[in-house]
Length: 139
Image 1 (cartoon, rainbow, N blue to C red):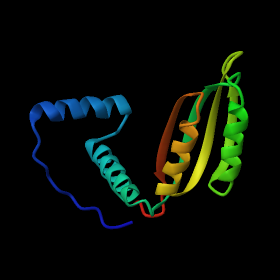
Image 2 (image 1 turned 180 degrees about the vertical axis):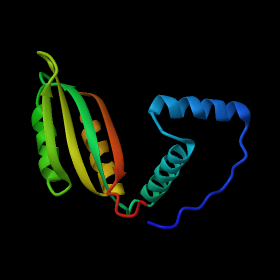
Image 3 (image 1 turned 90 degrees about the horizontal axis):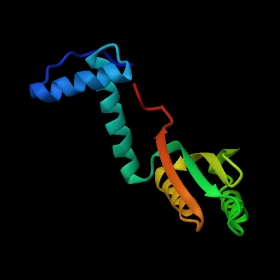
Image 4 (image 1 turned 120 degrees about the vertical axis):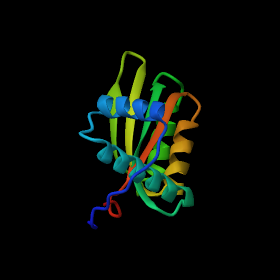
């Protein structure tokens, strides 16, 4: 970890009030930690844009398991990406609907492609990809 550097910023008072409310809601101890998290998040997202950055994340799917062949199609898709899908959790939400959470790892562009394929399967009611960093380059 590098040396800590202090710096000042100019900010509109209303924006600062909103930021302070956000800090309180999220439980930050101070503005500095909140700003550090915002910077880290921006840097991580910037790296994903190139598509070559190693990333980890989750793909969350909600679907009706009674839809013809849907479970088989999702399982087939997952097996075709067995190197990138490292874990899966299946939850029965009710008599018809299931939740699947897949942990994925790989290059950002490949992870996005896999998520798009799974979310795009006919019968998936909702899907979301949440990517994060492996943490290797963050300070």
